[in-house]
Length: 304
Image (spheres, rainbow, N blue to C red):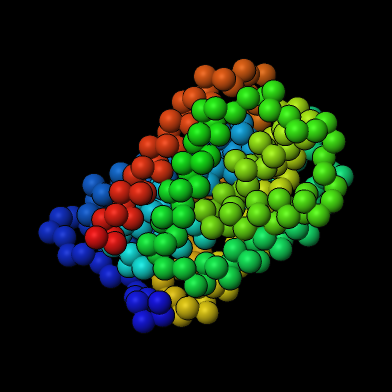
């Protein structure tokens, strides 16, 4: 993979271009209309991602990763690192968003700190293993894994029933720790805070929905911090050289999205504690399924 790594290379356009160095660093030397469209998408989707993070406790990564992948595609980032960069930058965003979301839920007494402490080491173990996998996986393989996991997440939103409870007591044993490691591992591979997997897991063991969402937001903090560091190290080890980036994290993209997601996350928290989400689950599940299909088609296109 190291031989496939390339610097940003820019397509020659015969249109008016913006020469601001900050905008060029994240969006490349794109034509004016493409830059404005990309900035608008960053703002709208960043706000939506923050709202979703607070509402579902999932970190917003399922929204941010497709957004960033699209932006990096039109900026002509090498396809060998495009997905890695999108996932890594998403994890960097989730660090602050999850902290805000977890604090907001904690103020409503909706975070089980005992379970968070119990699973912390397991989550971090999974994150470390996932970071090692990131350094090995090709971009096409990461896209395929992302699409498969999104399909599973989408069907969870479609078909999950609160009556699916295994036990009213959380398994504080090796099985519980294994599940924590698995959640951390898969979350890092797709750039999410883990809520899409940890919320159903917690609900199967007697957690009410609001408590599960708040606790999942705390998991997101534990996953995102070492995950973001892991993506930096993985990118550096693969000699990735990209403008204003460190490893697989683009800091300008991060700084453009994060403030918007932070501002919108508390609104999602308010809705989470006052809204029946049955219809919203179906809508969001359909959205995730569309994203999964889109990335699967992208994988077919790359590998064909």
